[in-house]
Image 1 (cartoon, rainbow, N blue to C red):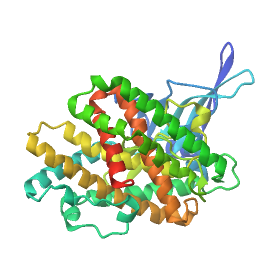
Image 2 (cartoon, rainbow, N blue to C red):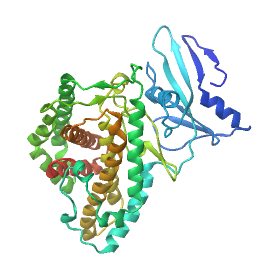
Image 3 (cartoon, rainbow, N blue to C red):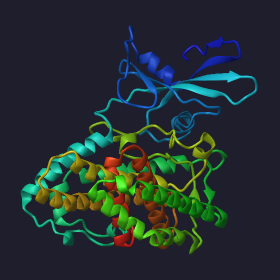
Image 4 (spheres, rainbow, N blue to C red):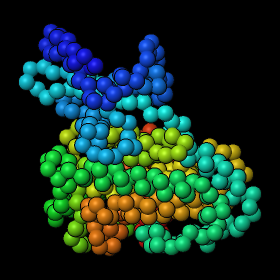
Length: 416
């Protein structure tokens, strides 16, 4: 890549492409440069070159520019966003007159303490210890039954400040970084691949139809697996199935009004595992989108609230996963469930408030609060339904988490 070398094969040609970042890093590096394959479980193979560079070799390749490369180059070369690993170069394969295939991407290495998922679970462990030791009443009355947008305007209760503590600042910072990411991705109106585009009535209907179809497929799958679920998950599943019409009605709110929002390029698979924690800040990584979708589908412009919904659901997952991993007495488990929802509620409110403060001035969100609530509700519910299908197919022991999320949404009258 540094030398822009070409290697001809029997049918095509492999080419290395550097960016200015690679040249800048090369000037600072001192040989010899050690290398090591990362052993972490992931969908690609990554190689570290000291504390300078990390090369990601793609296992699943397809014609067309890889999204992690395309969005990474845009953020590195055309924006001032500084909270993603800078792209230093890439490997490309071309044959015939077809679209080039991205085989590898090299990034500047960002020192970190692991991903935000691990950081959050560590914080939750301390939170639950403090909550259980506090002997505060863990009754359902501590949970506000209001839409999340309403909670962003409320003062944080003293209980949240005392028990959640420093993680509230982390949630605020992560909300800021998410807003800054979306503002950067919406910053070039002259680039047709990134220029924001308005919602249209046709697009609203297509989003609604897509959500309704996903819901129908997932509920059909849930019925077919119902008898194989453990007792508590089975009870929750039966409650969700009994409220099928209510689920469809929630999605149909997308058709009740014209939404004056913008569509733009987004992360596409945003959750705590896609964020690195440096010890002081957050770095957003892996812009490839949902791997199950085709490249053309992942390149579509969408509402940035889809990313926001992904992070809100990730907070819920972390809180309830932290419970699953601990051996608890029945009476402690009941209290932990309430404390998990309490943590998720106020962390989500802090995150969303910070996001809106940064993103709203950029002009791509609905100006009308009712439109904003409608979109946020729809994407949060869609994400929970998607998670339900994923867990039924891959981790049935976790299926209770998205089922709880769906029921809480329905009972609260909106996303909490």
